[in-house]
Length: 602
Ligand code: ADP
Image (cartoon, rainbow, N blue to C red; front, side):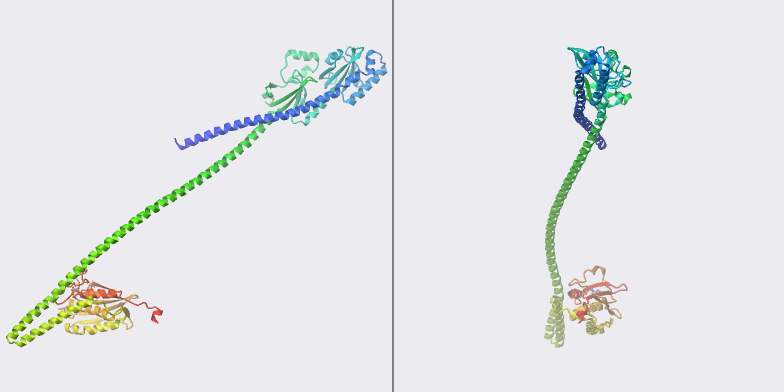
């Protein structure tokens, strides 16, 4: 499955879980706040109910006290005079004002008001019949009457208490006390809730909201309406429907207004007050509860979100740490593996090298051995060649000398003997050359004046140069030019090179050998140049080998260049050869110059 589909599915699942949790959270919060609101409402309800009960109790005893008063009874039994009536009216007025009642009045047996605290007002009850009021009929039956209604004269809502005025055990009239409920309602302004009082028909008789007055919380039937019309309790034409639905559940009641009236919903808590036969309700706007629930859910959601983010961040951090540690361990393992691999490679390489070195040494030893044998072979061949030839000559000269003496030719024998002497000289020379080749030099290596060496070479060569009619040209050299070496051996090398040059030009007219000295910062090159036949390419590699010679019998041993090469090597220098483009060979003897610093000079 593509990764974006997985991500989208996960996101959708997370959103569903989140939305579901939010709804559940909201429901839980709402239930909690409804419960809290109910607890609070119940407390307020109890307070308001006890306030109402207190007010009722306050007026409850007043009618009883006044009904027993002689002036009231005398008015009803007809014994009172006009002035007694005036006095009673005044008394009722003062009592009413003292106890806070709106009206106190006396009804005779026919229900006609004959005395009243409002005797002096235009809206006085005196002269009105109150037969239709239940508190009148209740009292005339010898009972205490309680009733609430909108006053027909005052148009004020009032609560009525009545007491029968008894004479000889029978009621002869009624004493009624009315107080208005307006002031009680005013006290409800301090509450945060709306309060209403409904009668058994569900008509709102008291309310903290004046627009709800005389509205029925439930629809009123025709029978109820006609009954209410007959009782004159309320002006039936003013009765309206509240436009709300009152529903009562097991735990709570709700009052829901229709959408035309705003659709508000109230949580309702109620308490029935048997002393007045009415019900006190307390109403709380449900939107407030809902708002509180949403706020609580949001706060809880934010806290959960914060905890989730922190948890995710912590988990991510821990996983990153773990990843980091894993990577480090992997890198360490990799490094250790590489080190182990490299170590074993190195060990193998070392082993191979040791083996290769062993093989090389073995091969070298074998070569040296082979070289030694070859050199010995070469030398033996050369020596036997060089010595056999004069030896056989010596033998024949000696044999001939004997024969000459037998024939008495002493002069010829003498000549043969001198030949023998010359040949032994030659053999001694050969033996000397060999000794020089093998011998270790006794001469120390040190600073040698090049000018002095060259001068000696010129002197040594005088005899041969004269003999061969050759010329030796030596380039001038500064007298203090010194090189590292040995005077005699350097001289031997140069004499050898000049002799070879003269050999190469044998038979040429005006043979000339040129010695040139090239002085550079670190070394001195002595170039010995001739105009002979030069060195053939095919023998270039071999001319420095011992016993290599192209010269004829009795003319060369092939040791000159080999000895010279080794001498110059001993001096830290070198001997090399090249052909001159104009013809002839050039041999270059390279010598090292001493380091001339101030200290050495001193
Ligand atoms: P030898 O002189 O006894 O032959 P060297 O070692 O001095 O031995 O020389 C070896 C060979 O090098 C010579 O036989 C010759 O072939 C070659 N050679 C030496 N010097 C010269 C030269 N100046 N010109 C040509 N060939 C030379």
